[in-house]
Image (cartoon, rainbow, N blue to C red; front, side, top):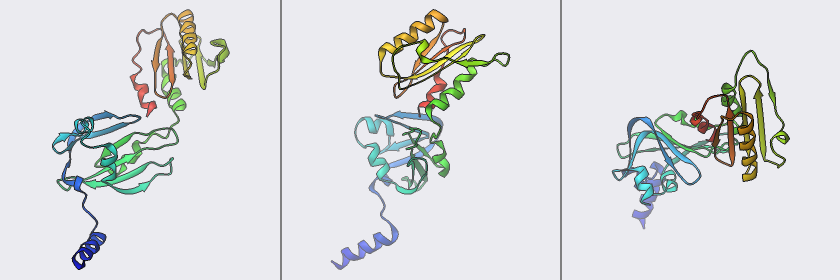
Length: 229
């Protein structure tokens, strides 16, 4: 009993070394690695290995869960953004790394890993609608023309959770809508096809859709994915 008590005291004084520490290895990579999880993404610019295997492979094979990975770490702080949490740990080579589990009021739930303590700055605090508006404005920007906003009733008679339609009479138009009603999407497709003929539609997370018409075919709207984080 004395020996057990002594070991317990030492553990309390020095902290326990997790069994996972000897299995995790974080090395330089310098390019984004994104692991898609059920309702979030795990994003890092480092190679992350578990038992010598890529973390993505280990997760897919159910050798470890993302919860196991996070629970292995020591919580450092909680941000005043809705509850994003910063954690730290050392890998098998005693290298310190940090992980932030985002939980912002803007809806960012992603997980970021870095060796930089400021990794928590990656959590997106900009509301999705504001983020999309900021980026989409560039597609119909023209200093010589004023833009106007179009009421949703001009496109569909059905209710939506959110909408924003901005028109530049010379350049084109973009729309942001949030709906799970497929008939609304069809109404928007019909409107854009009739009015502009050429347009691009993109589906985002959480039932958000974007339509853009500015004369170009097959616009690359992949940059809008950052607003879904």
